[in-house]
Image (cartoon, rainbow, N blue to C red; front, side):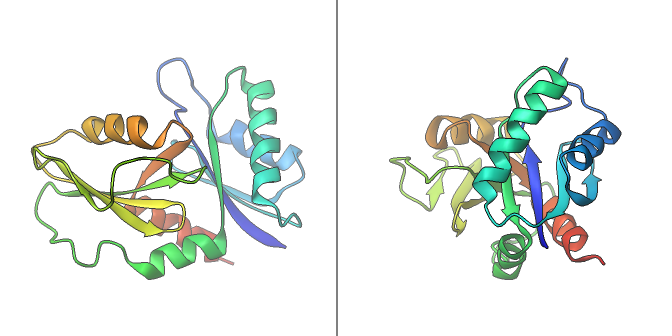
Length: 179
């Protein structure tokens, strides 16, 4: 069996409310095992015999929309991909100053942005650089809102992406490796 994480975008915002118990049930009803959620932001780890993340994503996305009545872009990553991302330690050179926030953006599609990476916001609010395949490392400085970063990422890399804090990514890795 292979382990994966499904990262749901934009749930529990406004009227797009999803209880984690209901989300776990959806995955269990789809036949996945070892289903666990982390936080209310839509982080679901699970195991399956499937080896095709794209098929998993499509199936979960369709069942999610049918079950909850709204769509959510979903990114699926294998435990190995998350482990490689954590091992790459994309923020090892970032100075941990008060108020500095570190994020990973998970892309569903190959980046088609014309922006050359690494990219530094001209106002000094954030930096974006490649972490590993399909992942951007983002550093947000204290004087900037994370929404400024999200606006930039949406314009440059599209909406089929979702962002998590580095701390959350590390917790997902721990959950995927917990036996």
